[in-house]
Length: 564
Image 1 (cartoon, one colour):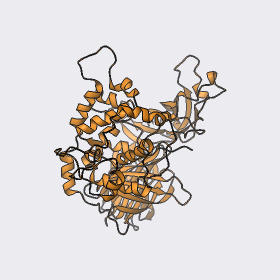
Image 2 (cartoon, rainbow, N blue to C red):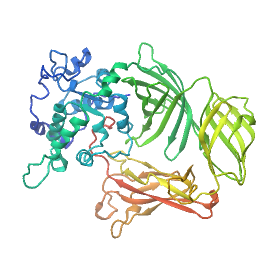
Image 3 (cartoon, rainbow, N blue to C red):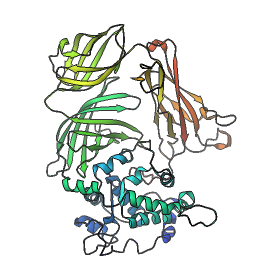
């Protein structure tokens, strides 16, 4: 859930010159009430919002506040706006009041599920971006931030225009970077004008999606037990359960108790947390792994309309770079299978499988487990409500491919894969990024993982029918990425541990490096899969590119860490 502090951001070059730059924006913009004949705009019924915001954002006779009533966005978007008011406009607001303002605005001037889902990666703080269908508009906006920042908002045309004016006032270099073309005068519209026209048409304030959602929106009834399945980069699958309880006296606040296991190494984790579900479907929470866990995990998920499924990401880190992709499904009386470890099994061997789920029978016998032809269930090794261990023997000539699993009345399509050989491995992400830090700014880490693949029915590598065999254990190393003559990045950028996690070196000039350069550069991250580790004839290698760059010296996002 959003976190607020009354403290100010550390002064920066921008904040020092903000009063001068703000002169580019007409002084009457924020104070002007909206036109009385304007049919758009959402009235503000909250006394808390009117008291906290109304001294600058003037109300009209319809109860609409200037600027505020003509925009819709996510909880993070409204939180960011409040932070900007504090930082740039010297607004004083108590944390509890700020939370209530965000709560009201996110619920009443928020997004519909169909509007929020395409932009979910922004709130989930994913490092990857998604291509926008208009390359020119994307080029204009992504010079400074992701398109997720844009597509998670809805505004009137006047508001999109004022937003551009704010950019040009506070960040005048935006004109040179993206907003205006250089060269001789032209009758062609400038990029900034094209962007305003495009965004006003594509992301208007009033949409059919919001109208429909406003008619059916209500507090989500999600108290109960939920089955958790997740994937942690470099660590592998995560299985467990979350128990959600409503906070008495509220209809959108919840407490959580979560227990899960990292399937590859068996490590168990228990967490306690709190959450708010904004707009009837946007889960925002925070959980900790005990009293010594001062950072915890932020939880961002979307609740499906039927209240039976939630999906999203839990994350932490100075740059939100460490996280788990999660799916939660409501637990009913019937048994349910979350997943199987290992996810792939070699032909001609006997292995023990761990079946993870909920309400699994404690009296399971071998006859209740069915993995299809060529796989014999030898015995049930252990049983528990959330896990069943079974020993299976795979025929040497068992057909290669995915297998459905049945455990009593529970089923999991494509639960595991039978293979006869590992044909290749791949390192993900293919292109990673880390940031030096540790002295003045925090470090940004990068986690890599190696996955094994079978060539599939066509016998050719890296085609659409390849079989993903899951994460495999490899030997990790770094190699020089020769970008310049006499490149020496390998000596300075940082180190890679045995689990594929890259830790960058410290920030600041390095006197041991030529030119007192920072510890930045790019290298190859190399994974080597030994033939002795699986059914492959030779060692397999794969690599990914890693860019190690400078810290983010200015951060205006809602999760920015304030420096002393």
